[in-house]
View 1 (cartoon, one colour):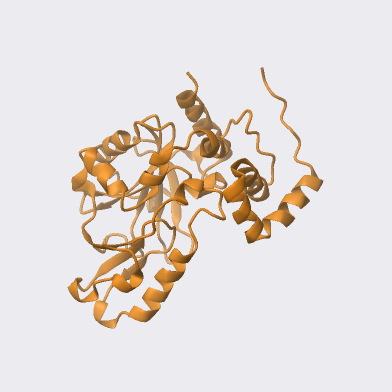
View 2: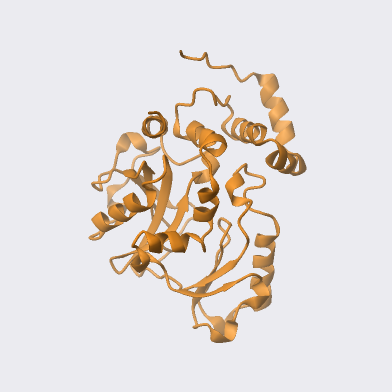
Length: 307
């Protein structure tokens, strides 16, 4: 039986917008009423009613999975430190980046023992990595302050991503990855999977501007025009990686137990380097891609969930 979709009225929208303005209110909801928190975030950001009773698109299913598909493994695999053990257990330890140290506090970073270049990465955050290109000229006090601020508020508390809340904050000190053929930063290869089956690849290439080049491809490395929100300039598209099959097989292995997950990788000197596993890309609110991409991914997720 199909449930009629409810209308998201102007009055409800104004009410949600006003409630969303209070971080204190959002934090309280995240700790006491998960469904209300999910609805508030989705409806404020997406500007439409959340049909939890009958989801159909990828963003809607991500909200559903937060409430009904999340288990302890979400927390473990979202932890950028603990996930390394899972990757190794899957027989993919060769894809792990070199780890120099793990610290509970920024003040514990063993500066003297580190090479001239390295990366500092909180295990539970987003967009808060620190890249050290020259240790001798690094502002240690400023870096410590930045990392302390990143660790101060539990990630996920104000985004209704509850699985991040139980991660014990740490700082990973890893090898600094450099990609000579991408002068503005590393190319991200983000593989969307349902029940272990890679469905699409989102590539993100840093550019001189703040806006990276993005494109959604199929697993044969062909641009899918209907999945992209703009015309993709094929001249900006990297050649098909020689290790693409290895990359997709790794994603399939890592993703197999889960209805939906995104597996992120880098490629350095034709070698896949594991990045992270993401159950809620962009919180499930504004994942990149067209309406058709959201609908098709929602169909794949529904097939994975429903018997």
